[in-house]
Structure formats: C-alpha cells, structure tokens
Length: 251
Image (cartoon, rainbow, N blue to C red; front, side, top):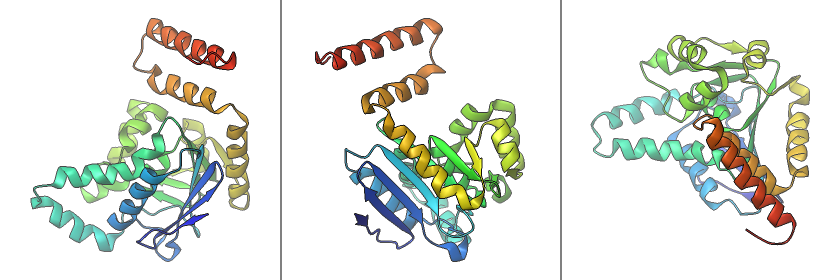
C-alpha cells in the first residue's frame, strides 16, 4: 500500500507491519521543508495500529542535508513576529516525535549527509543503520540557531553531556567510524548493503513478541530517570503483565 503525501517531498509505503518513509528530493540532498514536516506529522497520526516497525530513508546519495535554505529565510522571518510561533515549532516537532512512540521500533537507514534537521530525524529513530560514507552534523549553530526537533535529548542520551554539547556548539561533522564508536550508529555497512541491513534489523525486531518489545522499550525509555528501586519495580510490573498475558489471564 502506498500513501501519497500532499507535498510530493516524501513517499510513504505500508507493507503489513512495516511502514517505510522515503524522503524523495535527491536533487537537493533531501532538504526538508515545513510542507514535508506537515506530511510526516499527518502520516504519523494516521499510521495503522498493526504497524510495528518504521524505516526512514532518503533517496540518492544523502539521507537529508537539513532544512531547505530556500524555505529557511521566509519561514524564520515569519516566525520572528508570529504570535503562534511556539505552536508552529511544536507542530514541526510532532513531525519527528511520533517516531518515538513506544508501540513502534523506528530505524533510520542513513547514507551520506545527515545534517541539522537530517541529523535530528535520524536521532528521532530508535536505531541508526549507517552507510560507511555517513556524515552527521548538528549544524544549527552555524545559522545562529539551536536544534529544536527533539535532537538534544536523544543526542545526550546516546553520547553523554560533554560530547553532545561539543557536537551542538561546534557543528562539526562525525563520520561513520566515530559515529559507531560513540554510540550514534548501531550498524555500519557499505552503501550497497544499507537497505538490506535495515531490512534485516526490521525482520529481527519482528521476530520478538510485540507486547514484550513494547514493554522493553518502555522500560529502557524511563530507566535513566529512575532509581534502581523504581526501575526494579517497573520491571516486576512489566514481567507480571507478560506472565499473565502468556497464561491467558490478561492483566
């Protein structure tokens, strides 16, 4: 099943429990616009309940080079005085935020440039399968801006405070070897093997019992904010739900 977004800047495909989001502006390295974000937000809201895995990819030689510069000037200028500016940014954030839903496992298949908003889109996903030509950069600092699409929290979780701060305030580029070493990349493969590696990871996720996967993701998502005692209590509660479900007793 194919779902056509109104912007024409992405393609959405549904195949049973797997949804694929493809950014399809390779001529501009899949640069992003507010119209694309509106389509991503709408797709996330309409996603069927039986979807378990979402793969996000970009056509051509780059995942996404970030915010489209032709859209940036008018968008940012209008935001400066807009009374609903906060609501607009919240809507942009929702375009990526649904990829963190606990009922989903999201996989970014990343090649070439993943810059600014492109980096944050990859960070919104649970896993990043990377080609060995990948270059990550949190480049908002070069425009005098801050990352505002959810990327700061996920980056901090993955690489720690000092490294996250360094990457955000310098905007330097991180290649595949470093991305793997510091925890940004789950898997690094050749560009030719990227699609296969993402599909293999999706298949591995689908081998697990759906409700157990959801419980595990929820446990890990809350672990950093918990004491050991709180986390152990959460583990007990989750395990009892699974035991009762497997015994046909419900909750």
